[in-house]
Length: 450
Image 1 (tube, helix red, strand yellow):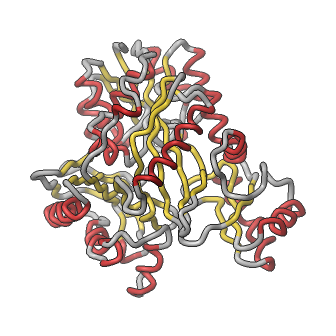
Image 2 (tube, helix red, strand yellow):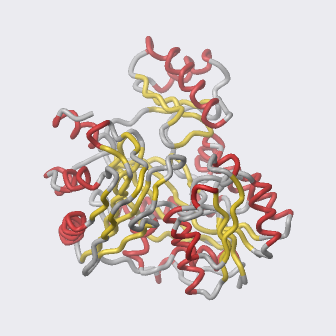
Image 3 (cartoon, rainbow, N blue to C red):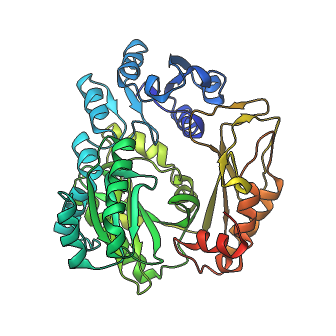
């Protein structure tokens, strides 16, 4: 087992990793930027080391500074959390070359699955269904036209290295194709340094279903699905497990394909296989995330498995402790992402000082948050403040507990998305499980919102 783990991240995920390490009797080192010097993870880590200024390029994205910090503090492993360098194959390679363990998949797996076109090819060859589209990145607009003629409209233009909705365009008709392709490619080049695009059929009103995967490099298992269809502009707002859209038979079919895809790359560590489910019950692989997800507590709640501890153990070379048959899922769990954003102003970020912080409690309530009264939320990073997770014997009980917990949750001094989540959970279509990835946009249009 590792003696000391360096955490190359911030906020709630850094605190989550610190807590898991403490229970495993592993020392922690937290690297942080200047503006995060008063954060809760800095206060609770065994050691903390400031590695640079607020811009992430000078701190959380600086490979040299992170690796130097690991060497100075004698850390024998680095946990990247999510975001920043978590899915950077070069970072994993640098760490390996320094004889430090990267807590995540092998570099070649990160690179393979990070290339969305290549990932599609791997899945197609493995028998996992993929959405019809280009077999790889398109070489100029002429090839885009050829693919469009083959698969028809509407179609989706996606950045090869994309994420978070950037470099993504829905094209309804041929007259919009060239301008959409040019703008998406430019946006991808600016955001990721890679303007390459691929094309696929656009599915109207699908469900977004992801399966949690764990592998030891020899075999993989899944720990059930998460329903991630509640999104705003491709950003997830709420996740739950199990999905109200899946029958036991469909769950088994998609889960089998998820394992098949992970086995195809001899997956090591935690990962997520993401699918779109259309209205006829057909499903298609869209991508694989080679890291722990923001919404991992939902799976922990229904499986009883601590995913961060499992991730650390797999990185040491331990084999999977359970077979697929031994994994038992029960109950229902929901997670709301509480952000420092103002829903009344188009979800504009609202950094600032937290004047008062009171978190809910009671049966079936969990909070993952780095906030405290008096903490100043910096404007330099994402706006996630807390993850509120509730569980129940069934979906109705989990929803009732979530509404009760949201009513109890107090964050004063900044605007948050708590009122928006209350509105969402009181929506009759949501309560009946009747929704898809365009649900939030339709709800906002009906209410006259942004």
